[in-house]
Image (tube, rainbow, N blue to C red):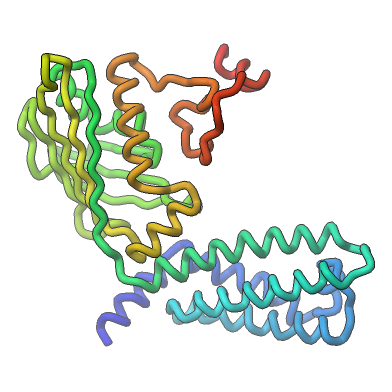
Amino acid sequence: MKRNSRSTVTLAHDPLVRGLGWASLALGVPQAVSPYGFTRALGTAPALRNRWSAAAIGVRELTAGVGLLARPHPAWLWSRVGGDAMDLALLARALKHRDGRGSARTVAATAATSAIAAADVYAAVTRTFRSTPLELTATVTVGKSPGEAYEFWQRLDRLPEFMTHLDEVRVTGPGTSHWAATAPFGRTVEWDAETVEDVPGQRIAWRSLKGADIDNAGEVRFLPAPGGRGTEVHVRLRYDLPAGALGKAAARWFGEEPHQQLDDDLRRLKQVMEMGEVMRSEGAPGGKRARAEFPQHPARPLSEEELKEVLS
């Protein structure tokens, strides 16, 4: 009983869950109140069967919306997923059996419904299954001494320069900081962290404090590279990935695969420490804005717009 209560409280303050609740109400009202006008707006024939279907879908949307806002529970999210499947089936039938009128509107509605369905699936999966700890490790060699690499990492506010998912890291006091990051679907997560170990020139470790949107911890170690070739930077991150393996699969589908992201971040770290900035190339003109470049495309000449931006 207590576990369910905590889950309900968490979902009640979840921006994505509340957003989907209001979306259900916004979609349900016109369908339930005016199914005739709604079917015509979608470009489907206002036949009696279609109007009854629209009205039923509207009632379902209203029920899910009230449930998500008043008594949030994963069951309401799965209700939306089931409803999305019904919506897509109806739209597919409308596209198949039509005389060509309103096709553009139906295609647009199908695209919008598909996007909403993706958000619903992500929300249902990540809010239903228990979080599972995920550990990531990666190593990069930089042409700097261990002391220089350590001093760079001590400046936590510089981490967003090469870590694409980080929006901001702000030092809030001795050994404490506030972090903000972008999660899949543009969701922002935030947490406060504390430094739990700081050995000059050797190691820095931190962990999130109580109340974090995502519990996490991390450490970075600085080891002399063989042959005096600089420093091996070893990074280990641990955080609770929503929905465990299913959440990881969903994140990977939308270009957020954690292991690949960490490897890419450390490549940019090497560039920042050795070159002073993240290098931009024909294959990845966005530089630090790598999140906008999933999936990465093969190297090609810059477009006129990209070339103007690089030269500006």
